[in-house]
Image (cartoon, rainbow, N blue to C red):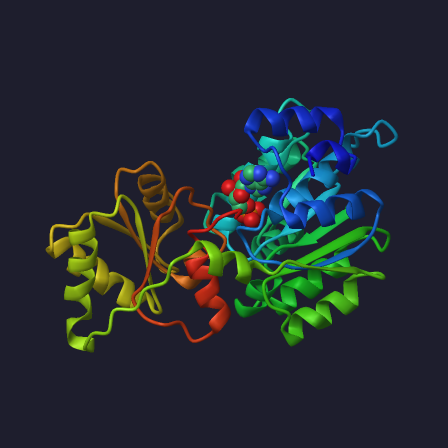
Length: 338
Ligand code: AMP
């Protein structure tokens, strides 16, 4: 299977070739033709399956197709749970839309609102946003949502986990009734099912079992240890194995800070991201880690949700998360896109 058989615009195919995407992932093979045909999608898929391109490519295709002349108002809206995911999805969309006359903006809390409002005023085609900031900007009259034709909820389960229920309802009420909808979620919780029933019209269910891929490609190891000696063992495991890059997950923000301090005390340079860190600090930490200036990133689940960090060899679960899917999300950081 190659991208050429999926029905995408030749300009997009050229970009994909240039970016080294030779074969569509299973979710892309299934979702792209369906979206091109105008169907609503309910996608059970995690990050790492290539789902961003699965919804972004056909939406871009439709926005640039000749029959679909450019308009002054935003036409596609992607709702995501976290600011990191907003930046990452917007970046991916800009990459896929390179050389095309399309603009994409990421809107999230913690960033300068006036600047976001100014950019919106200059006109954008695709908005990627966290629910809270989108509502805030809309209330101030900066985000016209009356022309949205394509709506995507990405990581819907996390959107609800983070308590954005009211905001989600408000957003839906602001949108025109005639639109194409896609909803992706790693787990189909009650709230996700309700939302899908509310917004999706005759959706096609696409299920990508990432578990099998994870089983095959990711080796899992357990180190039994007394609680008091966990931090010590962590430093030892990282130090003695000389891993080039490690992502360490903790359950709580306080624990992330404690682990970070212990690693630092052991001479292991590290950066931390969690919900209490300011946006700038989180960005800097991620850049440090991505660029290989720091080899250890300590993170909580929410802060790390959806982060795309390439070539990550080792994930350490400092503890076991409460929810089994969080464990899969965590270890899935290593086997990205198969
Ligand atoms: P996602 O699940 O959307 O976060 O994508 C995970 C990673 O896979 C990202 O780094 C993408 O750039 C990459 N990716 C997505 N689709 C493909 C593809 N067809 N070929 C190669 N890499 C891909």
